[in-house]
Length: 454
Image (cartoon, rainbow, N blue to C red; front, side):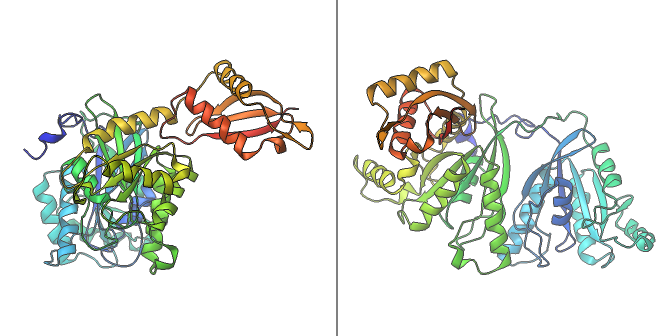
């Protein structure tokens, strides 16, 4: 019954949320799971550090081998402990196992077969999923004979690999793709990618869990619990696929004390670069902070579509018909450079208005990808000039000859003029406003490039 509220915009048929095969990378802490994950993905997605428990949530990425596309899940190390955070890490790993079609079980040749490995193996036995055993850190070819000790785990042939150097990955991935179920579709990622950014504890992870109706990411009242950028695929009722990315809370640079926090900021920035649309999450209870403006600036400068999401709206007491209007005016005043961004007031706790987000994201993405014919665009430019003639400087008047759109995501226009120096910022902003009035570009920045006609 917990998922019934999702029915208006989610397809809950089994197998439709993630069409590609799913490969989970599991094992005890510090055996090199994240390094192997990054090597297969071809980029540094998971944080790698010699500290057990650094990977806390399930990290998703797209992989490909011999033309076979698949989705990968990196997990926190499985530890049988009663400590609250370690218990949640183990639960996240077990959820990843349940989601997976194939499991890569990573062990460490330097440690040999440990009691923890045997405990993880018992969990994998119960999953009834295909398991490919990867013996990591086989950097010295002379140690390849030591892999036979891992037959004792009862999981079939062990594959020696070196995650750092990429040795043995071909044989490992051959075994992985040969274990894919035949009825799983094999499609490249064509989803709308959107990320949630904000300072710590504005409720980003709670929003992810509320949207999906499950404990997708670890939620804690300890600021900074989410360190990685967490990807989750889902599908709306109209068949549109989305990839949702929860990011670590972004702090002021002076408050980033440890390497892991610095890496988390890097992951959040990369998530913004990889996103089509960015949800800038604010905390209604705490209001707007200076760091919120810096965070929103990252998305604006990256050229992403932007939606401002005011979370925890349920905590505002004595609300009336003016409360939302007053808060909207405050946002418009503090975020003047995001005048194009729509604003939505939500509550992750009560799920208020969350069902409106997918349609809003889809609209913003469409505007972000919108292309205007040159003939129509130039009609708008000429009408704008007729209503407000171009300025003069030192007796020389700006002349605009022609305009054309040269790119999308974000929409980018080149305006050919007699002298770019004569195009004052205020007139450039005027032209942008005229374009916005003629065409719906809600949620997306516009780039105007001045170029002298040769």
